Amino acid sequence: MTTLISPAPSRSLERPAPLRVQTLISEDLLTTLFQPIVQLDCGLIYGHEALVRGPAGSALEYPDALFAAGRREGLTVELEVRCAAQALKDWSRHKLGGRLLINMSAAALTHALHDEQGRGGLFSDEAFGVAPGSIMIELTEHERVTDIESLRRAITALRRQGVGIALDDFGDGRSSLRLWSEIQPDIVKIDKYFSHDLPAHAEKLQTFRALLQLAETFGAQLIAEGIESAEELRVLRDLGVTFGQGWLIGRPSREGATEALPGARTVLASSDIAVLPELRRASSNGVTAERLMMEAVTVREDASHEQLFRLFNEHEQLHAIAVLNAKDEPVALVDRSQFINRWAKPFFNDLYGRHACTLFANPSPLIVDADTGIEALTTVLTSADQRYLREGFIITREGRYLGLGTGEQLVRSVTEARIEAARHANPLTFLPGNIPISQHIGRLLTSGRGFVAAYADLNHFKPFNDEYGYWRGDEMIRLVARVASSHCDSQRDFLGHVGGDDFVMLFQSDDWELRCEQIVTRFNDLARNLFDAAALQAGGIMAEDRHGDMRFHPCTTLSIGAVQIAPGTLQRPEQVASAAATAKRHAKHEQLSVYVMAA
Image 1: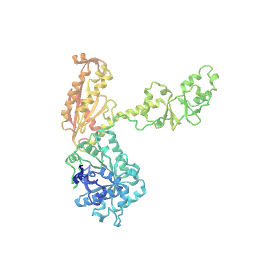
Image 2: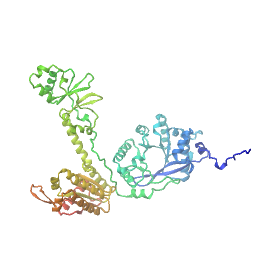
Image 3: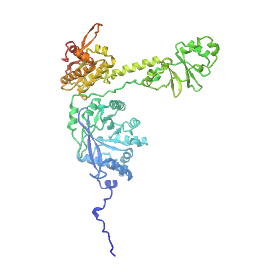
Image 4: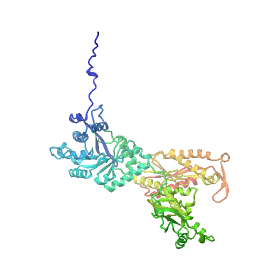
């Protein structure tokens, strides 16, 4: 009988024991990388954020895995304090300048303030030889701050030592506006989501503008995180964000940085200004149904037609009267004109005078909450049931009657809102309107750099529009927008639609004249596709001129008048607009494709 004895497993095949956070702490295996933060107005390094790393190549090298392991071992606070201490040690070793930003939770921050020897805590002068005034604590895990009083006392103690306070990753879903208000941080770091692809997202830009207003209110400064492109950096700089951080500015390293990377330095030193994205939708500017409300008398469900008639006689301005139940909830609406017509019929009073007014009332009136936006009510204007425009609607709050609104008020408010919106974004092309155009000109003038203002207008457009109708006319205007957009540099050149067939282009591109010529050539070629074959063969159409006389009009073409604005020559946006309009008139009058003049 043969006995088989398995050999002992080779020691080289044994799996190493999993690396533990306790080991990293006790054996001093943590290291720190430093990522620079730059001042966006001048390009100087403001400071560095400390980023912890575990042993290179290990499962715990990066922070997410490291802190997840720390939570499993119940060492979260100890790990955070150790990371902060390591950051201070490495900062002192490399003798870096500016501010050192260290991430800590509220619990770890409180723990770090007092060591067992009572030497004044982790951030005292004698701890690592780092001046407290150069330290900034980034408060993390905002949603876990349950004891705000303890945190406030800790922050007060830190500030007495000269340590600054920052809020980390504001806007990531965990951050708290209340916490911002209560602890009054010196700096708020805005989550990288809002910086990412910022030039293409107007809503993110509006968020930054709102945060800048909050920062001014609370006396804080902003750091934009996650900046990865020149376009993002340029927009943030021009918005007035104080500091920036991201891979375009500088990667994390052991030694930190003395200056931003070349790509960031080029942007920050450039006099080019960003073309800010505009919201491309109509806005009601916050107008709600309550703004349309008029106070009006009401009746109860058991009110008679005779009582209703007396009320209409006493209140001649009322277009309708709401019928309410005992809980002040609207149950019906009586239209004045319909009621008076019924009342005027023979024997109506004798037959129905003492009947309840609900007999002929509208039992399903339009009822809207007081906080409903005007845009949400526009469906009333286009609905098949136009009764609501005549009799109006009832306005409530939490189901209880507040007042009445009229169709006339609704039409007026919607019209005003859309006229105002069109000043910001043209509803046909969705390009920026008069207000953004003026704002961008103002920014160009303030920047002190030269630029070119070009005014584009269609030749013989009215006869085309009269001959083929508004639909094809709108297609031609949209064609101008598409062609101009395709030949403008979206990051340097601003394209706006004044209205009708008038467009404004504000060029920072050096090859602006070539771009203008390409726009005219391309448009003139594509516009021919909008004419019928007979018109193309004839070279134009017979149509009335502005004086009502029939005459021949050539096919529609585009003319551009451009004015070169040298620094300091003009001071106000309206002067630039006037000069560009003058150049456009020269181009049309002299039948030139592109006409250039100096301011």
